[in-house]
Image (cartoon, rainbow, N blue to C red; front, side, top):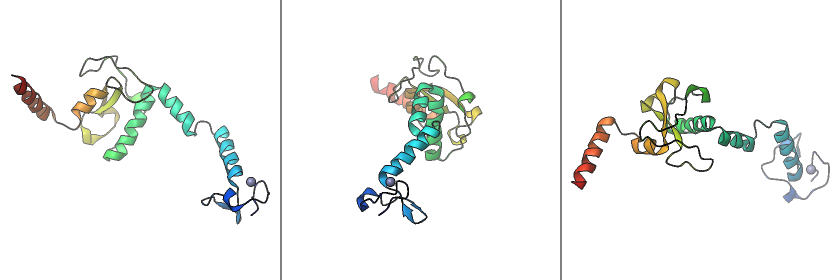
Length: 157
Ligand SMILES: [Zn+2]
């Protein structure tokens, strides 16, 4: 089969089955990869790797991005940009120092908390707390957390 780009006669396995056709012609895997690399070079801001690196360097952009993913999971509104919130030095709940880590989130990683969960990630409804505080808070109400605390204290008396 002839490749539409390099015009060389290539074996079938040198074409990927899902490859789109160009006027009935297919493009070989090698040329498709070249096209993709060229596209990445011409669109550096769109390539995932560049995006990932810029996210890891900018904690606010990263947590806004993660919040956008969660908003789809939880089916809640999202209208945040990295400029809509500040990361405090210490977690307002637990008092631990907030530290951005480039790998996995740790207890002290900053994370966006929805004050009223169902209102979603909108500028007036978020604040930054530690990942640990956010995890503990989860979707419990203040009353429920009071009860949990009372329960836990009763256990050690
Ligand atoms: Zn080719």
